[in-house]
Image 1 (spheres, helix red, strand yellow):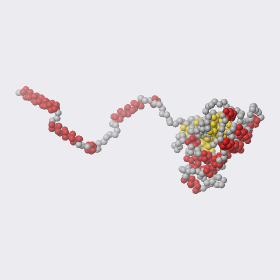
Image 2 (cartoon, one colour):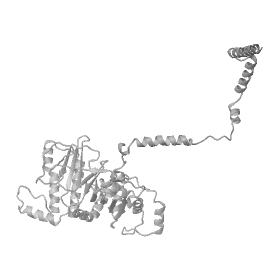
Image 3 (cartoon, one colour):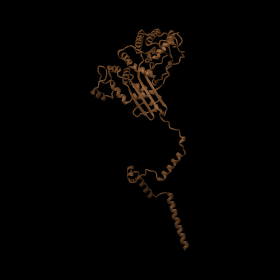
Image 4 (cartoon, rainbow, N blue to C red):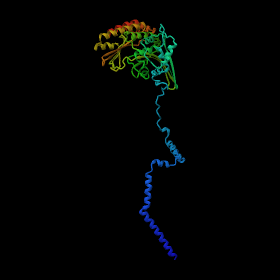
Length: 455
């Protein structure tokens, strides 16, 4: 009996298993299918907003990595740096050279190897801008000297931020101002110390305004390069602005003293030329500065007295350039045909013999009058050794002229040199001595220019 009951129980369990397998193989029943479809239709009818509202708003989302993940990240980062030695990485390039200096209140980068940048920095300083505004707006007495006027000073203060138009009379008065207006500025950046002295600030400012270059002077002087003035025998340092507008020449202490004495007379003839149409071809001198740069770190020590002059040949490509002094003693070079080569007097004679220079009669008269006026003025100032620069521009069919080197006075060393050469102690009596008195130099210069058929 027990065996029979066990057999029946086993058969019942097998039947239950078969029913379960049959149910699993045929899928859900109709009732279950209907129940599932109902749940799906409820989900499809539920909007995203309802689902979002059903979420637990108090649940916080962790903003930091778990501690074990954080430790793993730090290990990876540490291994990354350990595998890469700093010595294997290329060094970062500093955007500026050690000789370049930046000041937070200026757009000018001061470069130790570009002395004109120090001048540009001084001219762009707020203190100098305020001073130059006062140059031409102060009331003056009958003698031309500034007169103190509180109301006038207040008016200047109110308009320091606007340039405004300055009358011709005020500019001429400033140009002829007899009182010297010199200013000194000192700057320090790191180990570098820089100093700029601005000589005759008011007069040169008026001159630049009248010539229309005051607005561009800072931009031009901000960059410069060394310039080889071909043909000259001087030991002076020559610089040229990168925009090719200005030339700078360093003066010796003797020349500096001579120029400071000569400057008032120069401003006088410039006033006559610019405001009263006096014919003149003296090249414009637009500023005089002393620049000092010292930096023990870069071993820089510079002291230059720089005369700023216009570039007579700016925006031109002359085919011939001549430096004429009116003398035939050692005044010829072997022409190489190199660009911007400077030829001398004997070269000029040969050139005009082969290719005569033709000019309108009015132009010749104007040049003749200019040479006459300028040589008379320079002789009265005891100046000699000046030159007439001539450039032949065949493309524009023009001749560009200008008198340069107008600051060498007839000093005792020149007198001694002239005395020795006059007596033949130096040898060679074929030509007259190169150095004579200012009066004789003037006469010889005029005669030579007429002989060259330029006047």
